[in-house]
Length: 217
Figure 1 (cartoon, rainbow, N blue to C red):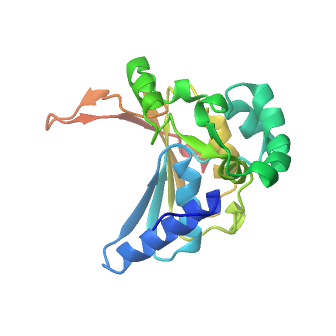
Figure 2: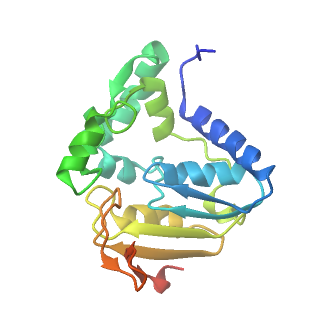
Figure 3: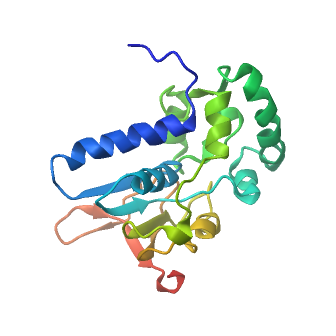
């Protein structure tokens, strides 16, 4: 059955919560992993669910913070003015779709330029166009559990060390407020979409070089 309503960000959260319930019924330990904007999504899903063993996120961006919005937008001016403008426009033409690459710095999705180019061609990935209502509600999320009250599970921030889109300090704004057990691990040399194999383990498999930032928690 085709979805006939305008999709908003909270629908993502509700769908994620239902998927979590499905896998929890099978009784294995469930960990949530969030890449890029999926970091906050994983956090919100864990806040709505129960018995999550842990969250791993490459970043955790609170777009309610104007600094985060400005520095993750395609251009700081877009980040500064798009949110209040969309707050008005989405009420009138909320179903109108806009390419994400026009508002977000999608060229920095990966440090490999060929991969970034391919991802921007993919209409289900970086080349996607989304309804204005979805974009506005993603930038103004209704976060049910603020980080100071979050104790549901441990949180590992596995942040790429060469992320050319979202700097570590933007994630630390939200991360440092978390009340749960938490840790930061830097994936040295990795880009926003961390695909880079950096070293070889004794077994021959490729691994990231991980540097743990103990001072952050």
